[in-house]
Length: 247
Image (cartoon, rainbow, N blue to C red):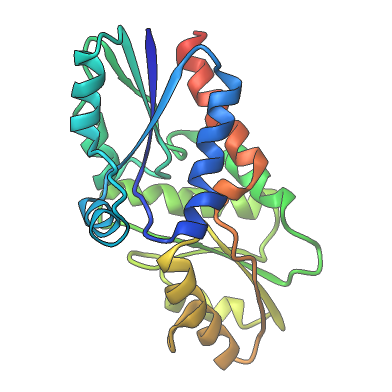
């Protein structure tokens, strides 16, 4: 028997979960009918909120992995939906063993960067103005992948493509001078789930990305969908699973 664990940071927003993570899981169940699909969240904070508020129990990655091995699964594949090999991904990688395989994060090598950049290009339009892709960021050195992605986005889309992070370099303040040379900005969250960070840090807070750009005089449009809502991104995850199960 083979088991597939879809491992995400998690979200406390039910609608965001249904539009992204649950869609990813449904597609994987469809694409791999002979594999049992499970889900886990790496964030203990998110798991605790869901259990306390909604009575929804999401197992921790280590607990779920051990349970599946104890139940007799010969192979357990862990598919992270994390973008980079940062702190949350390392929690998953530590579980790898003889019967447990952890797939790479979304941004792992140059081929991954190019694939994601081309998908992101496909959801943009020529009249979008400055394209501001907003990532979460991390203090882990794996966050260098964001800088590499920005370079590839500029190659694939043009000089109007910018990448900023909420919690690490490059932040909006590092790019706003160049972004201000455009009259319009289109903000695209570079996160699998359009949860709290998108709603508050990108759109609603007084110093959100949207409000900061508007205060700088730009017309701003926000594409508020999480990446998991896009079929091409879900296909990318499906391909990752296929590399292991069919490899």
